[in-house]
Structures are given as C-alpha cells and as structure tokens.
Image (cartoon, rainbow, N blue to C red; front, side):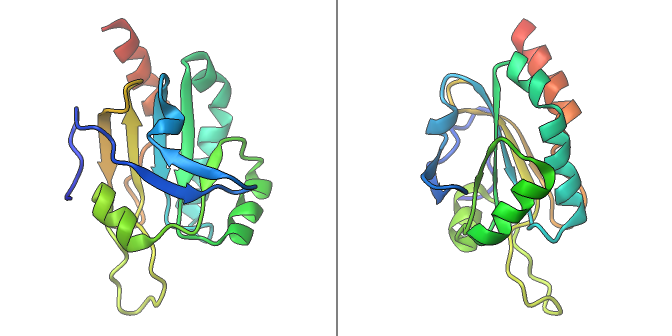
Length: 161
C-alpha cells in the first residue's frame, strides 16, 4: 500500500487486545480524534518513554476527546508486563503480523541482518474523528517518533481551525 498521506482514510486493522477482546482500527477511534502508535517492542527504551509520555498526557488528551491506542509484534504476556510497568490505561494491540501491518500502514520493518528479531519500526498516526489521517510519522530506526506534546498542540490547532 505504501505510506499513508494526510487526508487518506486509515486502513482497517484488527489485532488481539491486551486483556482480551479485539482492537479494531480505525473503528474503535470513530467519533474522536485518534492516535495510533506502532512501537518497536517493550525492549525499546525510546518506545517505553513514548508510551509513558502518552500515559502522562492522558488527562489532557481526554479533555481534547482524543483516544490513544498502541500496537506491536510483542506477544500478550510481554505486552501485559509493559502495561503494568507504565500503568498504561489505553488499549494496546499485541502479536501484530509484522508484514500485514507494514503492508497496510507503510510502517518500516527491521531489516538489520545482525538483529534476528522481526519488528515494526516506530510509526505514529493522528486521525480525525472520521478516521482520516491528519499526520503520519514514519521512522526507519530507533529515533523519530510521534510525541504526546506535539499531538496535543496539533489537536488544539485542528479544533479551532
């Protein structure tokens, strides 16, 4: 599919959700601004910091009627440990099919032959209440990712314009 552009509808994705149930994108975010964070894995310190920052910003995001979800290829047990570690309250999809998510969203995949793990690189999307992409941030490595404070500023701007 390639990289998603602003104004493009976010593609349909379904993943198992930590704690049970299914994360259905973009449907679970419909009617609200949405943030979709694809993170490399619980082992990534940058991802840990990013997810913790979104949790710290949760009250402001709630006030802006914004819902956050996160996705990785981590298994359910690993995902639950990450949720417990950072007291994450937003929905996290686990066990993502790396190729399917990459094909659907355009996310980069780890292609480092010295690293046997196969995972999605950090990718973030801000969606409008209709499920269209307003911002897409693609990283091909460890750094360069969607930041909670930037999302808050963007949504404040979009609400008045």
